[in-house]
Length: 387
Image (cartoon, rainbow, N blue to C red; front, side, top):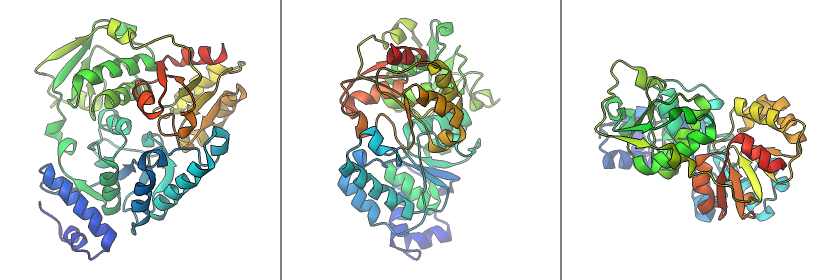
């Protein structure tokens, strides 16, 4: 693996032990995956930020690092809203451990914006190389924006953030970004809501696995694309997908739309994902809500009062930039929380059944929260919450 002089100096320990360890990790990854060199990155997004997922040993490892990140870096959602954790019902002992995790990341120079939607906070551009770790963020960056990132593990993304480079392999290389399987829907006009796209992704991810799918016949907007990719990343391992005539690379003259096989998904299969079970709580914002979704939810809750706990999750920057919508949502009794989500917070572990509006949450809630999950549209979530 070829290293530039400065990269070799980092590997030799001339810039400190932590940077040396991070470079050793990157070179090891690059060697395993056949990378010939490293490539500079524009930004990083680090997972393993919730104490619920990294635990004691992960925290101790973080506290032992001594370096600063070399590129703009944000965190994945943590286990609580940093300001409103008591209101969420997060135990004080957990909160103390989570604060220690945050302190460790802050000492590394990481921006304390804890979100799975970093693309709402700063401009990410077509063709940029990134080192992002959260599966839905990776799918969105690659597919909707046309940036380039592999699906990094938490330590790999942190190493890339500190060094400012990542191994040049996989989805960083354009020839590896061509589709390998086609997906068609028997009645694409029936797919209208983000939850519909989440349910489609929930089904498609199980079929596709880690391949790169090309969808035809559907006309999703950006929030729909977010839901589709997030669900496929959860039930499969999809880091990049294309939609004919919609996503940026699918519109390139060099795009190869001929795939070896095409699978048809019937809308009956998608509808089977929906259920009508009774739930104890409702949680939306997995992935975190966009400004448009916040405004839609505010309109749906206008003049209503929720009768069940209603959790709304969004990036802190999105919340700050959309205060009128947040205030309208919270007048209903629903609560808008930053920094965290239904999957990684212990606050929702007390519920037996949770209604969500995303295929990603539908896939993760049973294993991460120990609860039964039900998916519904935003309108259906509001109807259940206010009935």
